[in-house]
Length: 324
Image (cartoon, rainbow, N blue to C red):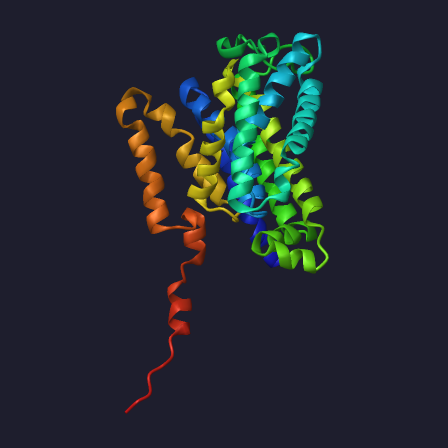
């Protein structure tokens, strides 16, 4: 009983922080908005971590999938749907489209999968630009209505932030359950040695498809909620740089760990907002942080701390010298 309780206490602490931060910042809407974007980034990074950290895939079309969901949700709302059914339909549709588009690349490995997914992301972005009737092209879509709430009114402010906190907490909890299941162990086996996994009877393509669909749902739900939260989207909101930033959050925090991507999102997502008045050094600071972790902690912050031996453990591994 005690080991199980010990395993879940980080989730309790994260839930307290996720719900407590919007409450503490409710008096300052600007910082509360940054916290909300960070919570969406946590959701995105958690989904990316399932693919990159535990399956060994680097999906550079992650931002594109989020964009498909955002545009689909907005389109359904525009024709009379309520936001929440539109979000569910848009997220499921975007995830299925992502799986279909990524199906050829799922048979590839390593760099080749990443390159193929990068091409797919480029095609998706071009679609956002040129299908003007659906996306309004480079002009973007503004004045996106906020989600409705039961009893009338719109979801906004602190209530919206708490919804984002709920999804971030559920996302990390779901990832923990997945990676500790038989499905998660199969994904790790595929990541470590795909050929050996096939030899052991694991249907590699099917497991990748399941992982890709689940990871895409993280991206899709985040994208659907991002659009009304910000109030404006354009093709640049979901281009390859967005996919790269989400990947950087996972790599920076530590891929293949539950809390690494959370740390990466919390540290990196606010930087563009906090340094917007210092645009000349913003990218420099961003790059130095990433390079510093890559050099000092190649496995990311959480991965490096996890691998670092404790003093007692290090002492126990030392062999005593013989006297004389």
